[in-house]
Image (cartoon, rainbow, N blue to C red; front, top):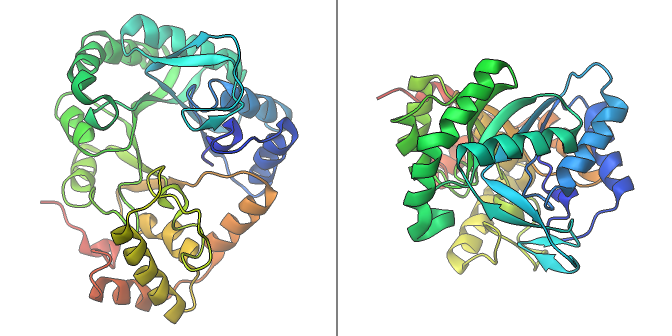
Length: 324
């Protein structure tokens, strides 16, 4: 379960609905939850921590959170900021240095009500987020941030470490420099965007780095019908016409094979052997129920073949993917 939604991403969510979402996911068998300080500026972590404290007495949940942003208190926090609505009274500030990493982990543990982090991810490194400042942040991370993460893992305060990003270039760069247990990659290995396929996924297999696919619906465009929904998002913004047309073509082939578009989107990344998990964002018991139905749906191999023949996806069978 991706937990940005219970941090009020795009729309406010009550404490009760956030708790009920996590509880429904738990009841359905979900045991991995991904969050970050950035999601609602601490709100998502607090809500996830409160829910798990009530339902996970044996500490079975696997929780990933992120570092790279510190939260500074502010006065007044209504409205939308950075995509989060009526979030907590903090402002995120990028800092990938070692001291910031240690402070961030301490604060996350307090919000999550946990004494350690299962998976710790460096959040939003790379040029896509930082532009010209990307090199400076990368230097900070390599000089002291990454060593701090390694030390936390060595001490047992963190079980695994890696990246949580939206672009492949920084993944390839860091895989050549440091050891990463996990990469959480959002939006780059989906029905609409398979840019991670040629280089990153083979490198993950080669290195033994497990890939978690976030954003399987590409911010929502693949989570619903392109024909009936008007307020569609792709990569957090309104989709360009080329993406709308491509999504509509995928949806038509899914219809021809009697498979809902969201079910195909959720299942597609799992066809690659490098992928360990897919984490759709969830808000509300209904979305949990829909996700479980999509996971249980029998999808014919003919669908993947048809999408491949239409040049809409570039893999059909996991066995067809070979190391270079």
